[in-house]
Amino acid sequence: MKIFVTGASGFVGSAVVAELIAAGHHVTGLVRSQTAAEALVAAGAEAHFGALTDHDSLEAGAAKADGVIHTAFIHDFSKFAENCEIDRLAIEALGSALAGSDRPLIVTSGTGLLSRGKLATEATDAPTGSNTYPRVSEQTGLAQAAKGVRASVIRLPPSVHGEGDHGFVPLLIGIARDKESAAYIDDGANVWPAVHRLDAARLYRLAIEQGIAGARYHAVAEQGIAFRDIAAAIGRRLGLAVAPMSGQAAAAHFGWFSHFAGIDNPSSSQWTRDTLGWQPRHIGLLEDLDHDYYFIG
Image (tube, rainbow, N blue to C red):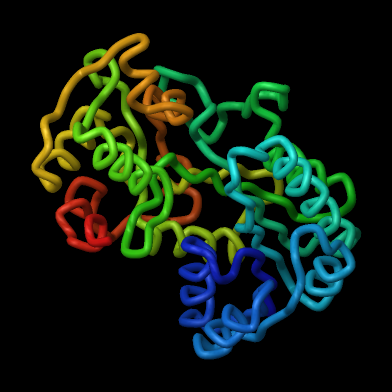
């Protein structure tokens, strides 16, 4: 297949590109810089210059493809609402290019806002977009089915880990360094699901090859890791005390990240595994935190 990948130079997207190429697919990746283009070409893909705000470029890239995988998102939480709107419009542009073709479009979402404290499955509906959480990637992606697009969704867990991770776990490590303490909220029994980036990449490939229209797939290797265990692993590696915090003390310690530190998001991927034959093969998050690459720099 000829597959167009947005976010092709990103942490998840670059792994998806490598997985697709290894499986014999022809990949074109969306890039913004010459450096990213050169890296993509070196990996065996073609570079397509553009940006999420450049709808003509998005449509041109998608129009030439047999399928599209959308992993790109601007992770600037100071402009979250604005970036959510950019994402929504980008997905609509990709859908317009694929309209009436029954070609697949895979959109990236997350498990983090699904049933808190209850096991989230692929059948669990995503919350409707709101001022509190304006991201509607999933809803916008699935709405493309009405245009004759074979749209589906991959939900990523709060931790997609591995070498090069620049997501939530490195943020926690940075907070622990700054505050000289690795903390968790209350008893720290809230859990984060997790997946290794290479296992997530394989799921994207399986979904583009075998995916069902309207399906929601969970890239979840570990159903739920207690947040206190994540904090303990960070504290051990940094030689810092591990401390429970509540209320104002927790808010002061975690700052804007308090919401994410308190997420209780047990999530299943049983249906995904049964449907696509996906089986995670790589190490779990706590074992990954034994690697130096999380703590150098």
